[in-house]
Length: 252
Image (tube, rainbow, N blue to C red; front, side, top):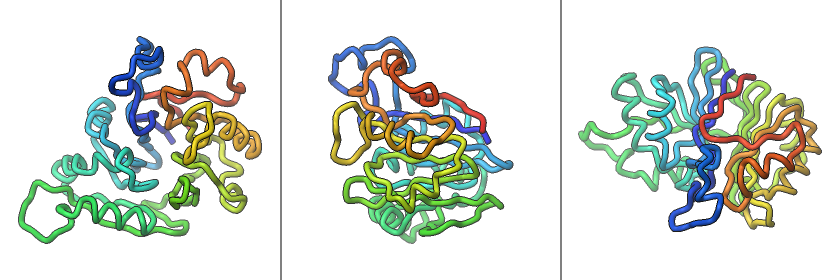
């Protein structure tokens, strides 16, 4: 399995519009973060998790030519705002793209992008097939395990595929759901900033969960400028924990 981090930033990305802090002014490419998304290549299958507002730019940069299906964590715009650009894959792959998420996420997408799902003869629209998920399922022979987490009061999903687990935008994981993560070789988990936040793990909370789950290697994502410079924050992390950055590729 190869995982590419298309984006590792929070909803504002980095740099933040109008901000002149040292992180937003940094010349280090690892401090430039588009909205969070990953691209997975596994068993001849191409999977995207979340298509945020930067999806077009991300897909072009990584020269993504194939796409089999998309998994959505939740329906906030920094995770769905690039849906319209899926139509390019419809055109050259000549097929609908299946999208998956919990009921609330899928219904919100249908509402937010109602023009896509209305019956009409206009051809320049994404062609998507909606799939509601709540439990483990198989697609293209790949077992996908949704992990139910909380984003403040919102029920959202992380995903485990084989020995890889991806969780973003969480601030609570129940003990039952933590059991689904145990045994993963690689965990990706959100870490917004150093200070406490109402709907995202901060650094201390993320590190506590990582320690509890005893995962061999962990990457932090969904990072804001309040977490600090990539170079400086990396120095205070345990050896098994790394800050992810845009365009990073890992093999599992």
